[in-house]
Figure (tube, rainbow, N blue to C red):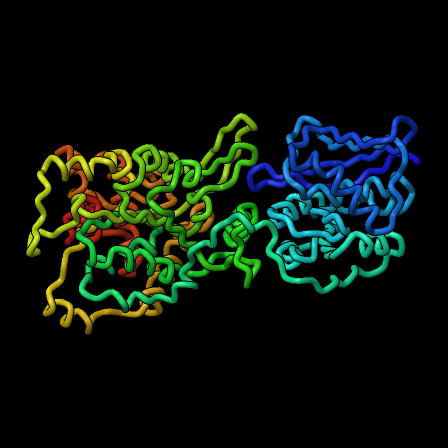
Length: 518
């Protein structure tokens, strides 16, 4: 009996860190000791590993067993280390060749009967392992489809411990997974994510709101934020749900980013391991700051802003959200990422999303032209909408008043509505035009261009800037607002097929920012 080593991966946010697992089986008081900053779930691996080995008919060493997880200063959380611990002990006990387990990475949770169960975060874990070059990663069969998304990595799917041990003893080709009852890895406590694929919606369903439909097209083309204000029943929620149908498919690197986040959160769709469509997340107004931004007492999980990465975050009835939750959105809207600090450490998640807010003009939500007209006083209305702070609204690129439409207006607008497919083609052409202009930079849409570059390389002509500088001098436009108006103007130019925005585009962009379009 001696020391055996193997490797696994610890997740810090959505980044995989290599962990070396060592097992020493030697003389001393019989028992197993786990060191290296394990959490409660990992400390319980001692009992799971012992039962799995015994029930798989492998001898449990009647000796002192020490399992070390290196680096010791890195906190280890979760049950994905079970398989690596079991393999290291088997190697130290001479059941499997120690040289066969030294290089591969092992991920998976062990059942008491020896089955290998799926775990969360396999994709970012395999991505972390792939940084070491040509490696082999052993994963649960339930996670195999997710793991093979990473190129240049040999993935070995296994279903139980005995199958894995036989492969380690004999070598050869990767074992074929044993058919098991379907289970979703680590999703038992996660609510299903609302997606546009499940909603099966189309922009042509929204009639009577031509300005709002145009605003939605501009948002999709440039990646801009949107605020819709209007009485209930005017189509605000319908419009927001149809925004993802206008967006193009995610590029490969973006798709891997999004899939990695949802893998860590345990919200990957069951029908496909790769998320190729932009996500749509619509939390309830009672959601806490931890649910929106991310958090957790022992394990930090991504929140709604990260689950909506490269997609849409929709806050319906936005003034009903807690003021602290709304103001917490300001930082990720600027930086495209969010850092969650807890006693267990700080974790950074990507959070570059399109924010869509919908709000009624007052708490009673009654229009003035209804039989039971609104009776809210100006003070009540001001206090209600005041929950959306000025700094937050200053980060919203476009603001639209959504009003009620008469029967005549609804009938007349039906001949002008377009399907999502038609609008999405224009959006794709505008995005390709912006991508060509931004070639050689890390940005791919107008909304991502930083202020310094925006006013240096992409500043519109003096004539086009005149309406904005006038508002800036009058105090109706802030410096941040100026940046956002210029970005929207570039998007309008891309949709129009122009090389640069003119005064028509800047006037239109300014109208959207000030909320004068209705």
